[in-house]
Image 1 (tube, helix red, strand yellow):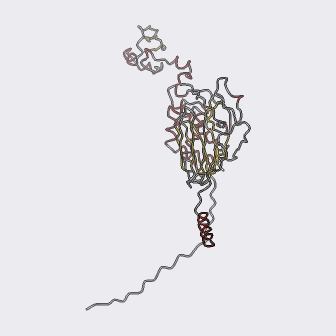
Image 2 (cartoon, chains in turn cyan, yellow):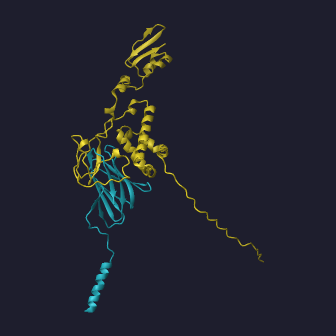
Image 3 (cartoon, chains in turn orange, brown):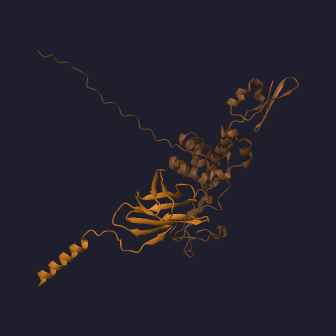
Length: 131
Length: 250
């Protein structure tokens, strides 16, 4: 009996020690324009949902000035894997008909950053993206 | 027989003396420095001379320049403060506007669209927002929401505040076309004044140069066809009068 119990404990302990993936079930949290949620993949992912009739560009400059760009066609979703770090971000319309939005981003690993864009008249707003 | 040669043992080179690293202070680039560097880029001039840029409203032109700076000279540009970025963009815009007016013989090239900032829609995102009802035209697509959510503002962000957009919850709206077409911005006066005769030329014949001409055929070759028979003035000066003006030929 003791042997069985010990064996059970051993198996249970082994199960607990298995590499647990990052928590992905946690509800998304809002950070700036992004809804941030966990993901299994280590490299952060930026997802942009474009619900406008314009082609949108998400331009992200890292701390070294290198620019990453995500082009999202009208009524579609674009995905971009980005290294973690601090970014200066800009979202602009390809045709220049829509005023752009600006912000900064602190992108962390095991996170997905999802944003949805629409077009609205007027207004001035600055946003912060990320943690 | 094998000859043996005695050579001196090579001596390993003495390691260079380690000198303490000098502390070099790198001064940050000024707006003028970055302006000069940007001005050297051909792609910037390509952008500024393109119809895509020229026929945009003033605010949208600044936005294009900001995007170019971020993509091409991002490190230096983003190292600037918000006001300096705005100043750099404005300086570039002013320079291109001035050079365009000087260099162009075509009045259409110097057309300026009215400032459209108040009527240009903004890119908005799901999530945050503040009402912009005061600046919204009656038929604007208005996203409402999330008015109660806190607004996060980064002090280092938003280099061009006047270009900012509004973030608000998802409300699908059409993108009103607020970019005025070049045709609607054309100043009526100069264009009408320089209208080509019979639509064949945009060249306005300068009256002063008429002294070098002695044949009406030359005028006709320049598409000034509707000239009638000349009127002879004292001194034998032939005066041709046509829709685009008067030409005197001695």
